[in-house]
Image (cartoon, rainbow, N blue to C red; front, side):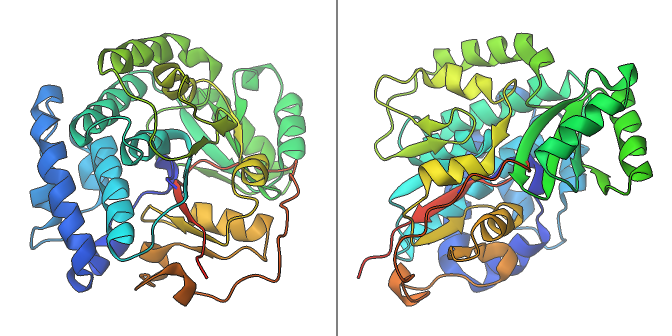
Length: 341
């Protein structure tokens, strides 16, 4: 799974790099290509800073020009995916969550690493220029929708953006509207936490930015994927005739429902692996279907060594994931692996 932007950190990655040769190699290779285009967006290179002697944080990256954090997330996600495959954990399908569309499509051969980096940087610029924010509510989507309706006219610009699972929903909108919603949620005993993102996403007000991003992506001429890629936002696998620039741009304006996506895209997966530095996506998978084997190798500190069959015993038969109508998820990108026996 390739996650979105809501669960990106560097501490666990920097701890894993010195003891995982394949990951260190992949990070060096990916950022050698990705950093080459960074000057086009006035973004400083990422690779040398990951290899530096002093620890690097996402907060430090966020102080740099817009697009810096997105370039880092893109490169790290793609490098984790490459390293997993180099160590025998080859994905049969890729699941793309929001921003995760960019590294997922790059991994599927739709564009070069350089063009994937260009997409990441440009998206960061477009989103950061709009403002707003996103808040994680500790409740399902139905309750979240009722909360928005009850919050009054001051919250009318806030929308449900992502359903993670039956106990988590992410809402998106202008900062003043989010503050009203957060106050209303707290008064009702519903946990509310503002995500560390200086912009909103999955919001209909981003139509202009979405169109600009689609135009930019179209100039890069992405090609059809060489392996299956399931888009959580589009709710389907990308096909040979898919309009990929438009699909990428809809991630700015359309919400998504992770439980429904898992039901459609990963029902028969025997192992799901998160190609990110966090575990929010993996934890959602575990919450949605406790029988599903899911791994966040960076956050869990458990790097797969060898074919997937060595990681866990097969499940006792298929277990369809029932769609959960009460949650939302703004993070994860994941690589799904079918175990070979």
